[in-house]
Length: 199
Image 1 (tube, rainbow, N blue to C red):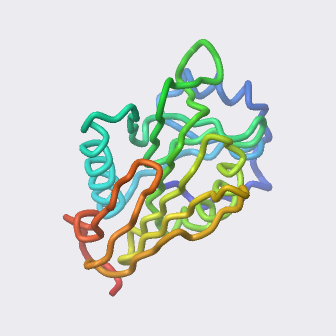
Image 2 (cartoon, helix red, strand yellow):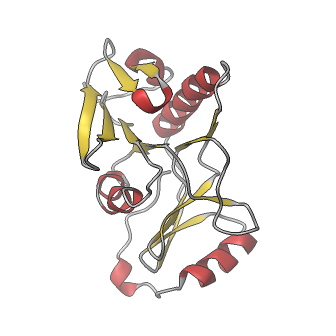
């Protein structure tokens, strides 16, 4: 989800418990990263179009007799015991949902996460958030789709617990292979209804 660039050094530090209490009562969503609360900002039309295209492709695929479910950017995920609560653009869970507590509003067992990159979020999505996502034992793949140019990447965890770029594409003829749910994504479909992309 798109969010503003923020100078964390001037922001109050919260506990995870304080964040959750505030977030569950809040009118607007925010994420929690290493003790700091980051307010969510509005997303660009390209970001929203790509997020919808990704959600539709994955959702339709998972309806075909699979035991997995996809959730869009309103689903909170907890990725590290103290460091991260966030709302990825795409969340996929296979098998029973597992939650942080009996409120059942924060998932802890995604097998696939996806983020749509924007200038304000790319560094965080590639850096600190991805570092903390890797602490999730359940997570098998991480998908990044750029909202300013035609570019997609799939990161995958191997049997030795090492993450690597499994595949990438940078043109509309390309595809991205998502092994965890046996899906091949078409770049041309991911970028339907986008505009002014850097070629």
